[in-house]
Image 1: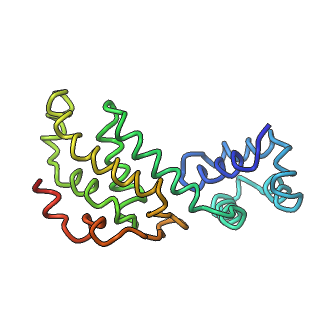
Image 2: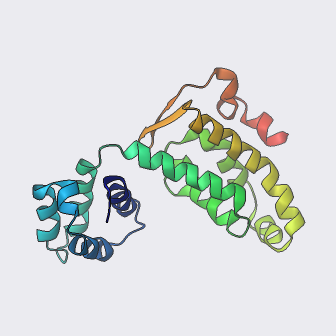
Length: 190
């Protein structure tokens, strides 16, 4: 049986295109407990929708955006998960970096990820291929990026960086801790 957070997390996955329209439609039909979680009106809007309609995707997204009370919570959870995966997952390392750089993270406003994004984007395709084949070079490449991932995670965990909405955050760090904002060249050359 689903609880409210698990249900909202699944809706959030749809917003991030991790769940297809077909999958969410089937999910609505197979989880009658969603009526208790969302309320009768919202639930019936979901199950009465014609998912073959060309506007069904956008209509579903809009309804979910209005229903989710705190997208910032799920955004922060997603960023923390990506950073933790970066630290522990060597097999998908470059793919995780690509996601952080390109898929709604750094490029869309999470500037506290600047060092990680720049480290990735300034790495040539040839070098990426080389480090994929050489575990020692990959370990060297990962070292500074992982240090930065841990640093950012500490700020998130200590509520000095708080994601409040999609691509919106509050930065309560001291100026000296915002090194990626004012001294990126220094960071890249260390």
